[in-house]
Length: 469
Ligand SMILES: [Zn+2]
Image (cartoon, rainbow, N blue to C red):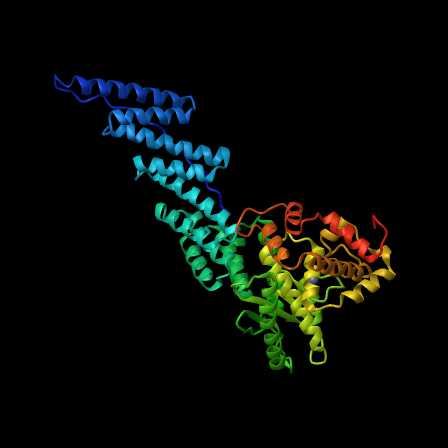
């Protein structure tokens, strides 16, 4: 994301007073006082005391309301106060109020308008992170009205469509952005990501190639481009199919292609409503689901050997003989779709055990079976830190079974004791949906009325394991 510095404004010198006719003694006195307050304001501002300066200029202006220079000094000092609040104190609301005050006195000043616009942009981006999309859109619109040529704000507007998964509008807006600001690397990156989310991998590669041309030394651009090219090599000749909420891609030349596509569409739409109902969230944009021949799955994902399928922004599934294993296909899609919804709500903040536990609950896995396996191998029980951290690339395949069993069992116990409602609340709270994100441990305790350590202890007891395991 681009970050534009805000600018301060210099004060104007007060011009010599116009000649006054005799008999205007009162006016002369008022003007003398106004000038004195104005001098005081200039002095306070030079000393960095912006609040005192504002007060002095306000007094001066009250005495001489038509004096344009005093009004201008007041507006400029409000501008500087806004810059200070935003940059030194991170007080976005205070800064906005200051720019509004300043705008009353110098409404056409370009620097103030731009600063005001950038403050609105900052507030809009905060709201976007909290998925308060309508409020973010209103801020960006107001910001663009103040500073129509500002690249950063135009970019934020495109990023909003990406965040709320309106990829069709987002692509149009991002294309417009790259035409208007063809040298902005971030615009090409965003266009590439939006096309990627639409399942247009080749077009995503083209956009990212522009970014790589503009910024040849950016390692993140380079590695993303390699990933996309790898995917394009495999998926480039796929032809995507849509259902209402999904776009899925099946390798060409499969005999059972149409039957598989119909089957997959039915399962996924079912998952959309069931998982959505459980977590009270229904994504706007189509979810991408890509099927692979097993060798291609490993080439694209470089997944651990124990990974059956995965979600990394797209749901990726290696093809087995699904005509004989429809239950496996159903379970796989429900599992990965749950990760998709959890990720939309909580970002990457959801602890792995709960993320996997919820995914397995959606599959309808047998909890008692998992617990029976664990009771036979109590030494394979994971500690708190491992439960919460990343598993991919960390667990050996023989550990993986026990880890998933424990995740399922603990999630089941949590739902048994607290119900499903708090889970949806917790995910939103750690993901910062609707409000600033809450630290995980604090959100856990608030939603479930116990700490994670307490849950782990209850679970150990319920399993008949000695304390501390
Ligand atoms: Zn999983």
